[in-house]
Amino acid sequence: MAATTHTVTNQAPPLVGYDVFTSDRALTEGVERHLDPALLGTAREQLSELGRTAGSAQAQEWGVLANENPPVLHTHDRYGNRIDEVAFHPSWHRLLGKAVSHGLTTAWSRPGGHLRRAAGFLVWTQVEAGHGCPLSMTHAAVPALRTDPALAAEWEPKLASLVYDEGLRPASQKAGVLFGMGMTEKQGGSDVRTNTTRARALTEDGTYELTGHKWFCSAPMSDGFLVLGQTDAGLTCFLVPRVLEDGTRNAFAIQRLKDKLGNRSNASSEVEFDGTWARRVGDEGRGVRTIIEMVAATRLDCVVGSAAIMRQAVAQAVHHATYREAFGGKLVDKPLMRNVLADLALESEAATTLALRLAAAYDDGGEQERAFLRIAVPAAKYWVTKRCTPLVVEALEVLGGNGYVEESGMPRLLRESPLNSIWEGSGNVQALDVLRALQREPLALNAFLQEVGLARGADHRLDGAIKGLLTELADLDGIEARARRLVERMALVLQGSLLVRYAPPEVADAFCASRLGGDWGSAFGTLPHTLDLASVVERAAPGRG
Image (cartoon, rainbow, N blue to C red; front, side, top):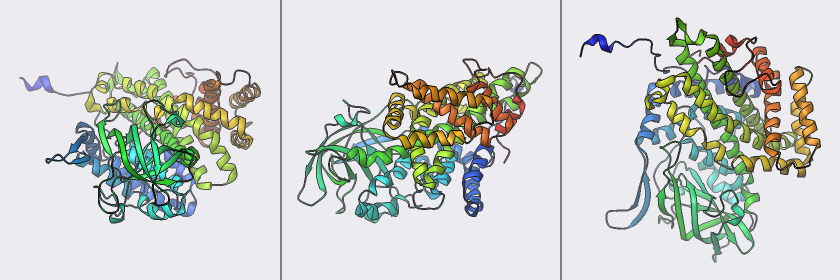
């Protein structure tokens, strides 16, 4: 075939060889805003190092290979012995190793740990989202284990280790461990109180034998799992190690791996417990209370993870439009495309800004911030995760047919985009959780309104939205049926308040005009044309760092 028919023109180069952290202005400014200045220099250096790795061709190839070579379940060895092992591609281990070494499983004991980890998680998730599952659960297991000081002393140092130590061995023989969890059962889903897994007390205090089936057990090659089971006193939390201290395998039969929407790299499984040894975590009958802080931590990771997917989608879209020419000029300079890109950039920046504010509240740890998180986390989880999929769809469309093929990476982002809205409680669960906090915890509403009120008077559209929200909150008739509408408004008002205080005027103006002022259509790309959209798009461009 003649070489002239294969001349390639008007294609954007790969978005590679850039610093994912420093090129994200909303992210870097958020870290600078919330982190103790004494920690900032070291944090910037570490996050930039991770960002350069995330933007490298090598790391991007790891993400591709981990998904092109999904995990394989081996239930038995060659002799017929039950082994229940899952084999992963080497790229999966490289991704996990880099993440663990950069502190993405440790936050609870280091200064500014939650903010620094959230920023790193947001950067590294843009390489590949599937391995974020064990990272998130390992991080989130800490507050549950702290309900039992002896368990925490035994496990927490290894959960917080910077060493990724793969393979199934007793935890005491490993330099670092990962955790998974198994809460969901066939008949209950989010209604974990209907769990039927039974726990029978053994002679040694605090030890039990479990019998039951878990419909979703994440990251089955982890070293330990937090699971729920029923005792005579009610639903209780347990720690299930994969390998016992004498080196024998715990009874942990992996029945199958899920063929699921989303990433292909992570192994989600169904497991059977039949005489499975476990240690109680917290008091009998208090399982939900024991894991509640773990749930809150993983819900925050859902927000951060969605913000990461959104940021990568926007970065790819702006990058493509910067190089692609159509109808006599660069796509990025076309007024209608600029409107689309600016609208996407607003959504992404609002998600990132909110995620970092929540992480900073964890680091503060004071009563006011804890009360704020009680409402802000489920509200943010509800809204940000729901905005992820439509944003990725629109960003993919910016690339046109190029975005519809696997090599672009956009289909992988799209498949992953609904996950965080479902994981750790879907939309209705989050909305009802906000209602419970409003009805039972007046300090939580007060803290939320104080946070929002810090921007009062700065923008008339925000002020109007706050007034409307207060009217909604004063009317409790039919509140459950209105819960989604109410929580959406709460999340938008909170995002608006944060952007008015912290973002450049053109970003805050565009957000308030569209999301709060009602000057917006039903799809992305319907911002008021009088806004400074070029500045919004330029701010979102990757490759600046």
